[in-house]
Amino acid sequence: MANTDWAIVVGVQTYPGLTDLGGPKNDAEAVCEWLVDANGGGLAPSHVKLAVTPPNKPFRTADDAEPTEVKVRKAAESIQNQALQNLLKTGRKYVGRRLYLYFAGHGFSPRTDQTALLMADATKQHVGPPYHWLGDYTANWFWQAGYFDEILLFMDCCRESYDVPAVNMPWTDEFAPDFKQRVKRFYAFATGWTLLSRELPDPKGKVRGIFTRTLLKGLRGRAAEANSGRITTKSLQKYLTDSIHELKDSDFVCDDFVIASVAAVAGFPIGIKIPAQAAGHRVEVWNTTRMVDFTNANGAGIWQVNLEKGLYKTLIPDLGLKKLFEVNGAGEPDVDFD
Image (cartoon, rainbow, N blue to C red; front, side):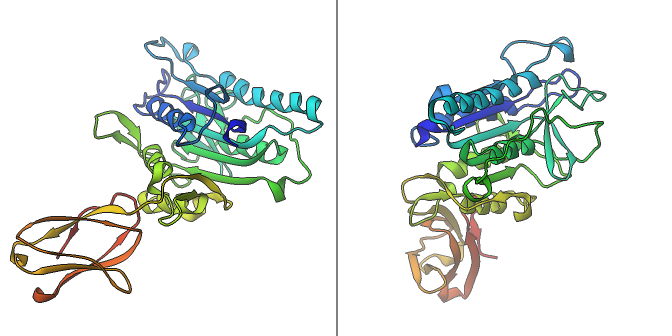
């Protein structure tokens, strides 16, 4: 089924008229890697429309900067043209199973229902059309048109609220008669409305958006259901809200469907810090109903144990020590007896 999936991926990193960022190009390319990975999205490379800051190409002014709104719009319109071609062949404006939309860079929210990516030629004075691209609008346009069965939107950008003279909505609306019943959506954002997104160096020193790095961890297995290995929209939403505390369930649009599957997750590595006085004593880990693992401590150190998602307690019965903790797959810190 993935051979009928399509994607538009945009990463704007250099802004001559604003401040440059460090992560969007890295993030967009990492998303593309997952999309075409046979163990990830499984898309044909020709079905991924990529628009990122060109490498080794300094821009003297904002007027010279790329990518602009034109490249993103043409990428979307190439998919609209595909629907028209299919109409001539099959009598139906249908393109495929799924459309992925990913946008990273500077952003803002011109309305409560829209998040905009600023294009490379934006400046403090020029943020209205054609200097931004609306993620929600694009996703909703394709949702209503019914060209796909599933629409996924990911936006790694700020969502500060400020007004613009107009918003960039270039197309006449299309409405498939069955779109509300048939087409499912999952929209996820880097942060809550009016808030800022963040980027940081990863362990290798490459700057990455916190949202995108977390998103890809989830898509590669951290968000999978423990027993089935399925990554659903619901499990991915929970993983993201557990991992990024600024996010709330109300920040998502989430119909229930399966995004991907990985090998069933046996558990997540958890480190339990054993104090020196525990030497010679038994250390136990319990879930809500039974003991799931134990060790006999030799002294101070970290005991590594793999646990599925859920609520646990670790205890050293002889010393009366106990600690409650939760495993949510978001990369928990070591468990420390207080």
